[in-house]
Image (cartoon, rainbow, N blue to C red; front, side, top):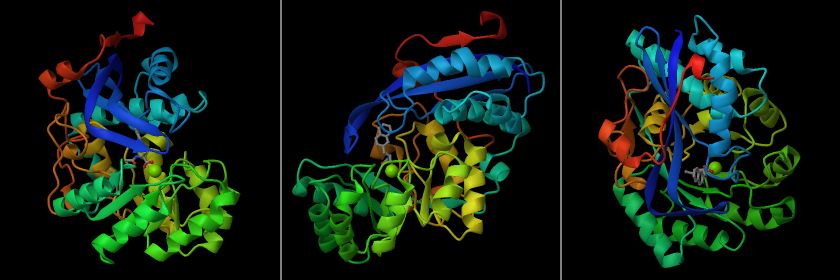
Length: 373
Ligand code: NPQ
Ligand code: MG
């Protein structure tokens, strides 16, 4: 494929309810979208999961746009015959920025696969036609509000409830949810790096509540701290922010810093690197699940394809669109029981609805061609 032109566009989707984590509170999800068009008429979309501010990871929306505009696309425009596996190598000399790179690689992947009539699930090696999904529940305004929210999601059918925790909002909400919904509810907790090893004794008290996993209690680069906590807790430790590549996943598993991995294609540089992490985790008997970044339907549908790979044995954070948004830029992703169907259409299996895309676009779309750079 040869890229004839690309478009950068930012959309802003209001959240139905504020989403509060230890990183802060989100009321609007702005997302940077990349569309590429090939010289043979191919067209593909990629969603960059970087947030407005560099709180979850070092990347942020405007920084990703600048990097794509000034460095990533120029490197790719120059290539006469680009295939999806050639994108990362062509960008490898530019250090870091996995979310920006993932968005561009996904757009090329979507364009090539749509042109071939091949679904992303088939291309990646998916083995299931639907995937069990969970939901991430933010830090609530109070315990009653928390129970109402959890009750709504359990009634909706979700296979797993994940509670965001932080110092001052951890043991009590977890205990209350466990006691209210019983032993049968699959329950996890996600700290988004809010604790330090000095909190280890306190965190170990979560063992009383039979969590399936405790996600990213400490700083992304503290493998030793996570390994020491894992050695003293029954609850399995899962890493998210720490896992920025296949090499990082190998290092974390070998250091025994985690026994479960949350895979997010944007955080690791794309769906091909995500599959590499899946493959190495499968070989190491480490279960994986697909994390969420409040994606639009573009990223949400692509994540469903990834979650259809054999090693994705735990419910992921690919919730229905209705968990976050009144309306999306694509057709809504819907829950069917405790699962969501894996897209079977070519590429990521979806394209934005033009009217919705216009409605949610904030700021003028940017058209980039080899001679505008
Ligand atoms: C996680 N996602 O697993 C992330 C945290 C997170 C679903 O919990 C804007 C964009 C705000 C991405 C807030 C879930 C966000 C975000 C939190 C991701 O750690
Ligand atoms: Mg997380």
